Image 1 (cartoon, chains in turn yellow, cyan):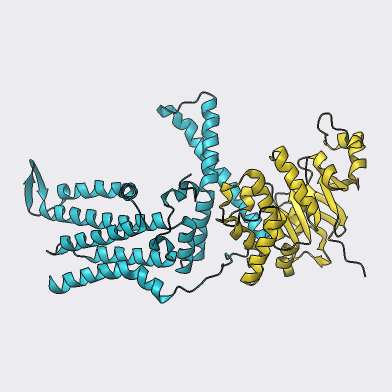
Image 2: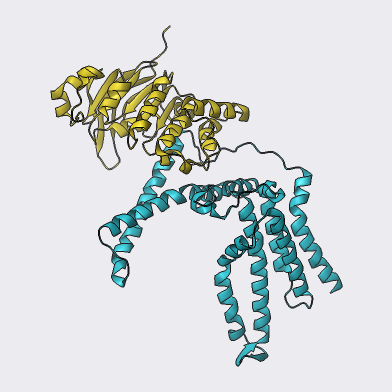
Length: 247
Length: 260
């Protein structure tokens, strides 16, 4: 028997209470261990889709399934363990007084025993190359370090899928490379929301383009980025001088 | 950033490893509260009251010396007392009853006593609190409050205040730099028209950040209660060491009440 896909989104539609419809029937299937970039212009519905993955937003049409478990009211806690969302601003993600307590927040919410929590904290910080900062307050770290610690705060929950919202934003080039190295080394399914097309090409063999609340393209990142018409139709632009076929 | 420990709110902490530093935070909180209660329970009108205050002062200065908290640090802690001083100075002027002449001013005797008592009690309590703040990291204080069963929402509010004071402070600074970079100088009353909306937008930004933080918490399984970390029971010895200060103060008070 093959493992169920890490993420299965079927015909997902959603309108906000004010009547604004953000998603019009999204289908997406991500297999175990895949790294997929979610591309699309501002207002395409990317954030709305992400907030459906762990059941923060619910109640529209369609179904989200995480490793075989449908997202619903009954087992939200388990869904939130399986889906690790790293938000864009690490200052939103890191709210505890110290790094260690922050990385321990998720495992403690899962009710794990203290020895297990300590082991998870050490493991997660080690995975992002930040071992030894557990006792530091987050505001003493550089922005790049905070971003990596933010990744550790969800890794400590042993997620099925890691969802990253604009992971490269505001990073300096070295911080960007360090984060890429960390993400490449993680043995976990990744869905990465980004405007940073070279980063998508570097890290994700496959990309999905969302626009107007539907998936408009899904395929190998290199092929999508070489399709100038597709990019232009959906307000996606490569940086000046960047040629995907020459990377 | 203060002593490199807690940003703007950690400035009170003085790094050290004295016996006072090493005491469990919740014990220190109980000790300071107990000391303050004994101090305020000392009747200022009693003839032995000032002797008792002097004894309390010796006690709290002794603890400060043990903790390696300098006089300068203590004096800075007393700054928070200034509003009380202003109020205490008014008391002798506005109180009723028999009066005495001091340097041409007619002052109320009972007002003078009350003002003196108020100042003495406030000073002693603030000194004890200053020693506490200087020997305990802010987050250790939070842990202490949690262990003393302060309602969890209150501890969480304090914790977020501690965590985000620097973030909000940074936003405030950036907004000021942006204003001044475009030639703004807040020196006259008209500046309020600019500063009011700026305060409003800072509030909205902070509110929105609060919503984003809540979202991040929910995403990691937050269900309304902060998950507790490990808690080790404090040994009786530690309790005894912590309670030495309030117990000694209570002994002074008791001897005053019984013998005075």
